[in-house]
Length: 286
Image (cartoon, rainbow, N blue to C red; front, side):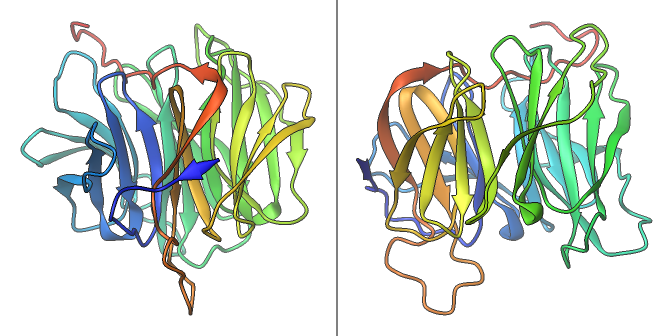
């Protein structure tokens, strides 16, 4: 059973993460970074507003209140007062207008972020890895709409959705170097678009399936184990705060949004999940 108690309705609510200290999320196209207060009926609190799209963030270890962000055409550090320091803008000179989309830190403290064309041009997107020294490297290309990435708690496996193609792929990750192994199809979703994902402590993969009003839990072997149904057509992001699953949704693109489209939902689940890892810059105290 899911419930929504907060008054907020977001245009494109995604990138929801439990940091261990609280819940953060973004309204992508509005460039808003938001926090969800512990009181479940309280409105979301705005942490920052950027003048460009904001795909997702992770906390920066050793820098309280600072974030690494997938934003606009690249990766930046976001200071507590809202100023930005760019690490790289790899999509700034792309032949098509591009923006960053979903992103996450892995348990080893690296940051991973996907890019896509505003037009969702086939194969125009990429996946980037940000190493501890701030270097930004393109590690995958030919993606249309990347979502995730999501990591197993040990950091050894990455799941990445290509939403437009209805597929989630799995890669092994070299923990020492961050190098990816070959892609293997994890699940194919025939009736919607796999969007945001999270992995619980048993390796179950929770996937928000855009366009279907469902969030689904898949076992590590790819079998569908459980389906949650929402009163919102476009679930977009998921995270686990212990045994509470938080789900974002979106109103964007709907000509007749319902009263709960764009809401933030919660549901109690059986298997808990870990907090999102922090990005670790070389030389920073943790």
